Length: 116
Image 1: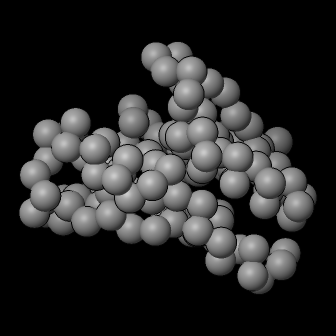
Image 2: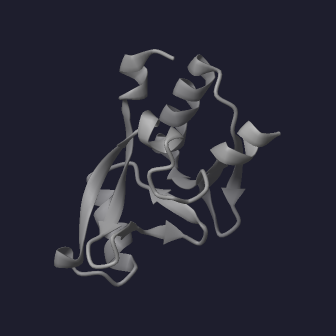
Image 3: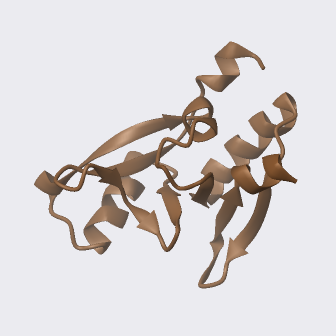
């Protein structure tokens, strides 16, 4: 895999300071298109500004299961498009489907595809 592409930032995720973990959308680690979108997601989950930080997430982070979600990620549209391009360029298998409550959110599973 191209090292430069693996370091490409694909999205942003909210890290809950006092729980020392990333916020999930059901069982999938949430990845937002922008820092602002990630902040809004965290506020919608009931956290205040001091409860969390927003981290930039690279393709490499996803492949290393940064959110300890067993390779499952809930990606906003632009994140999924960036991820998909890099995954296809690198020959990375993944499974994706629309989130049943929001068709603009893709649930991507990297782990399951690697095990089949």
